[in-house]
Amino acid sequence: MEKFRDKIFNEEVFEKYRETLPSTKENSLIKNAIFNVVNKYKSKMSEQSGGYAVIEPIKGRIGGTPVNYDGNTNIPKGAERDTFYQRKICYGRAQSWGEYDFSSDITGTNFKAEAQEVNEYWDEQRQSTVLAILEGIFGMTGGVNGQFVAKHTYDITATANPELSADALNRASQQALGDKKSKLDVIFMHSAVSTNLEGLNLIEFLKYTDASGIQRDLTIGTFNGRLVVVDDEMPVTSDSTGDIYTSYVFQRNFFEYENIGAQVPSEIARDAYDKGGKTDLITRVREMIVPTLISYKGTGTVSPTNSDFATGSNWELVNNDKTGTAKVYVDDKLIPIARVISRG
View 1: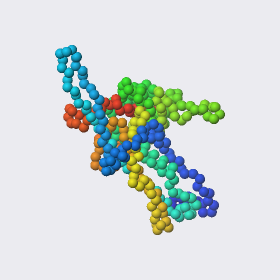
View 2: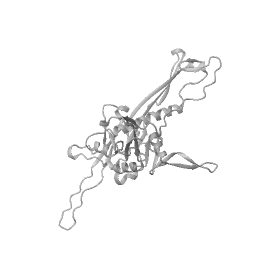
View 3: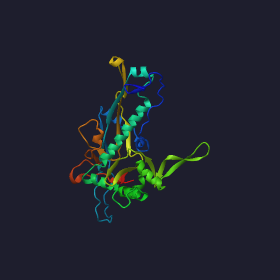
View 4: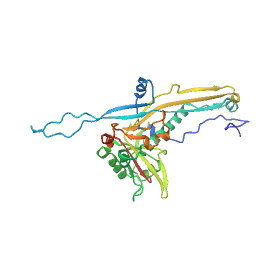
């Protein structure tokens, strides 16, 4: 066997390439009910002659304590409704892939990137961005933001039963949302966690009936009433005792997603001179991934990197943008997410 520019070929008899290596990533996080696809931010930015961030105002709820209506007590003059806002930011990414003509000439195979591969590549990058956002959200500290993280995190790694269980999931959901816990209807977990639950027969796989009338299991299951999605991109760390797994529990459509688009999403660049000729495929994406009622407050960039997204100080709960005692945050019960940290 010979190699030319990392392409294996047989100089005497060459059998055509039949397959491309499959992706090792499932990208389950972005394929299963976590995105509410919207179409509004691109037009908002266009109306404002472009831009990269959107400030969305949110009406607060009416409230206050009623007075006794007894004919003697004055009714207080109408209290004004408070308003909140959420800052949502767009990010952009770009990549290219190229191949020399001679690689195809000598092997008889087209090595240029294919559409399915490109789509899978951007799915992988999108999932990495979502995981970075989750890291940033749960990296918030101080005041109301730190209280949110503590309340929406359930860590059982140091308990007598450190593996994920139905009881742990139920308690994590209650701790996060109280009487709204049923909103958490999708859980994403590492395969090591799901394997442990499968061994205890705690995951019930959904079923379908094939053309022959035989009932078979689907690869998606339910655990304690929640849809289970398995993906090994879920965070894993370790200490002296062993591996530590993070599982995320969401309400469906926790993130808004919009493809903002680039001026030129993809193009071909041709260099006929370089080593006999080379063709590059260049792709660009601009999009928004927005968590429910959590603002991106980071500044200084028109396109946050994943490192920016993973930084806790760049995020805060939606608030009324006031200072001191007048600053009011949304009730964290309105943010339908929790994380469970376990050893399996």
